[in-house]
Image 1 (cartoon, rainbow, N blue to C red):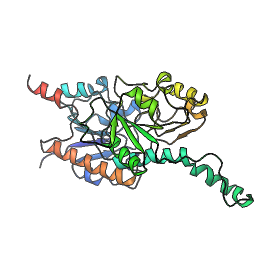
Image 2 (cartoon, rainbow, N blue to C red):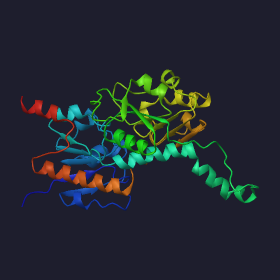
Image 3 (cartoon, rainbow, N blue to C red):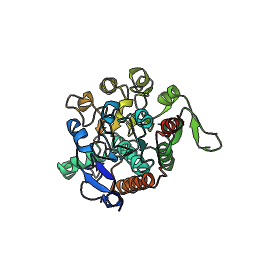
Length: 332
């Protein structure tokens, strides 16, 4: 009887806090699940693993070099900037991710943030519960101007699956859609979307939604200079990566009225640090990186991860993100 592969899940809690079974993965090997793994315990816990599943645990080249039995890593996420994929590939470790599992949930959260900034449902709910409606001499009141989205311009930075989903929702609200992507598709493919430069997008949009990956080249690109191009009535939405935004510059811009508000589901360092300047910035709605976390999305994630493991075990890996380094190694 063949020995079962040893599978170690290093940080499984956010994917399964109790409502999303690991059974499809666990059925494929000798599986150990850790809710969280601090850096000092990674090597100890993963020492005998052939397969590692992880979301946010940092796996750099130095650490990977201490795991000689490791042959496959499946991210429990789409992004893989916490992992040295080049080193892994060069040393025969295949790395897969989970693409497109949370598209609809992330797009939904982008609009939850935008609607809170424009309609202020939470603010008015609290006012009602504080007794302000019961004391009001009028049948209706509002604490702050309410903004209609129809006719406004939505600027989308990044036009992959999530950016396109955001565009569809924006169009359903009656918004005009502009977008920036380094390689714009043919105009005939998206006739209702106008592709513009990044400077044009920030200056023309009434709401800017960041839906692009973070790379070594675009960290902090939303800075004081780019924010200064925005209309003072415009909003910034970030459901992508916190590191895309210079947080000190955004906090200063909000305090200075450079833009009307921001809705953020991500920050540069997570969990959020207590001295993050955005905590005290006005007109800033922040959620704790929940855009991806609907049960439906997490169930899709688990199913794709199980398929990633099955593909590796069958010798037909899928969703690889480091195939070019693996292929180069195989040709040596």
